[in-house]
Amino acid sequence: MKAIEVLFWIFSGIIFYTYLGYGIVLFLMVILKRTLLSTKKVINKEWTPEVTLLVTAYNEKDTVQEKIINSRALNYSNLKLVWVTDGSDDGTDHLLSNYDDVRVLHKPERKGKIAAMNRAMEYITSPIVVFSDANTILATNSIQLIVDQFKNPKVGCVSGEKRIINHTKDDAASAGEGIYWKYESLLKKWDAELNTAVGAAGELFAIRKELFNPIEEDTLLDDFIISLRIAMKGYKIGYNPGAYAIETASICVKEELKRKIRISAGGIQSVLRLASILNIFKYGLLSFQYISHRVLRWTLAPLSLIFVFILNIFLIRFNNIYNILFYAQIIFYVIASIGWMMERAKLKLKIVFIPYYFFIMNYAVVRGFFRFIRKTQSVNWERAIRS
Image 1 (cartoon, rainbow, N blue to C red):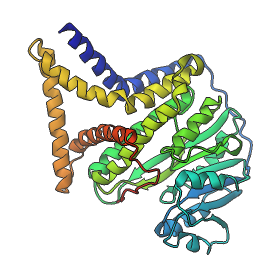
Image 2: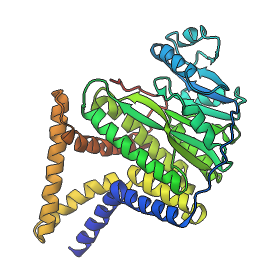
Image 3: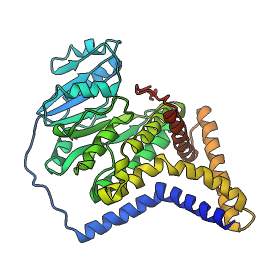
Image 4: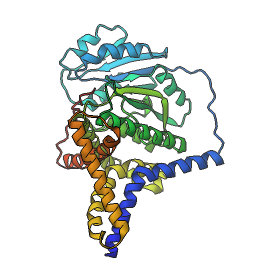
């Protein structure tokens, strides 16, 4: 029984550290750094190198006009617009041809986003490339704020912030996703201040063109792989929440689950593909951040939730603390179930949607794991319907 107790607390510790503990440790490390080290300010000189905004789009005809208007309104004078629309058959490329300031790269064959991105990068000569999705709206000063971070020669990649908005109501998807991204953005801010952000948001991130290497065409999380491989070269991944991309929440949790399962499958793929970063003796602080912020979420944490519940069943008759913890888990999953029922009934109560969204996140990791090992996850995105 002692072994069961030890395992119970190990798995409980993994859960706590993954979702809360790392944030606490990270905050304390940032405070310590601020106390011990003086921050060196980058010289505030005007610098406007040529930047290419690259949008990889598949059948995005309905978003073209809004995205072009937004791109033209960006407060940066030396900006080129490039769209790659390989495989699109809804007229996206023809619609884009009406805009004289947009370079359109198109092939009728659809080989996936990564193949299109790799192909497009061969035509780009700008020293800085900003990647953005067709369905996201960028803040006016986003490009300038990103470029400013590249004044530091140690920065090889810069991530913007993803912001979730909902025009209708606080349903499960928008409530859960919005809170998740607020917490995630806070962790990114602290990660970057301590050492480096751990990955970039695909909705808005930038790299030095010279650091780009074509990535495998079956890659599921291109933004993550590209940014981490740059970090592996010794460069920092910067982060500026003032450079943000606005995206509406998924219309319901069922649609959000599509994204989460794919991201989870991509997470498992990334852990295997970036296995060398686990060597803390070689990568030091980067390894610590990577394992704490990413690897545990995609591997041990969801499994720990299952093991803790099962082990708790064997322990409830030995100590009152185990009774309390077991019933606390029951209450949590009951609330998550109520969130599921309310979401189906189109009712709104944010307090029950948060546990439901947390459950869905971890459920998606399990689904994503099996989808990855069965090789049933397509490299082509199945877009979630958004509000």
